[in-house]
Length: 97
Image (cartoon, rainbow, N blue to C red; front, side, top):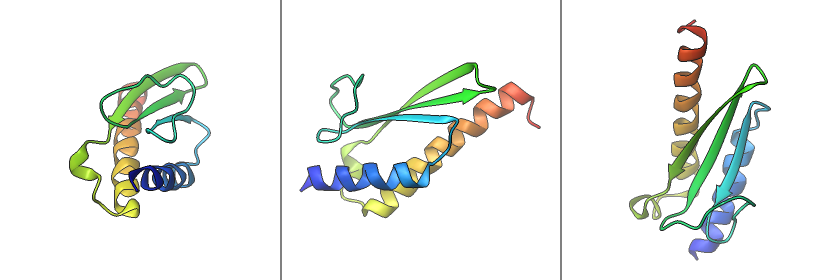
């Protein structure tokens, strides 16, 4: 059951984060992209490319406490995490413009 949920979550996050400056590796048990390292919990590896040259990375762990959440809620949580990450980088890169 968790495998199906992670697969649906992967699809949902990909749809909601259609951004050419964002590169994601979905590192779920059933949905691992190349380059993912096996970890205790599923995670997303997010790369944010600024001005086509600076690359910033963040890993977003999906702890078991979130596994029971609805796929949409979980996707919203992850999308929020990615947006916060992008805003942090933008404020550093562009001085909070």
